[in-house]
Image (cartoon, rainbow, N blue to C red; front, side, top):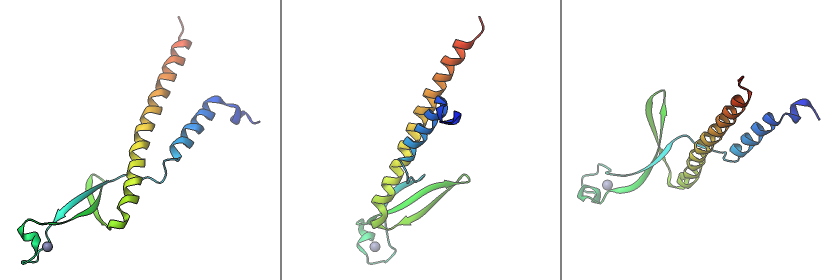
Length: 113
Ligand SMILES: [Zn+2]
């Protein structure tokens, strides 16, 4: 048993990390279904019956919005990964809040009176 392994703070941090790692793979984007017109003059889409939904993956890169077409057979896989990322963000925020409260409690206990 090393000193590192017996450190309860470090053990807790490792457990947090493992719990979050269960949410892999994840994807930091959003999926948007759009109905589109194809441009052919005689197509039904010119009379309001648009094609779709066609799916696009949106994400931000250096402040700019980017997007890519997603083939229908990839939609559910991407959707799962995006859900994982949202759960990751929520869980991480919760864990960080709890950690901050722990520190508040410990620092108050050690405060000189
Ligand atoms: Zn059309």
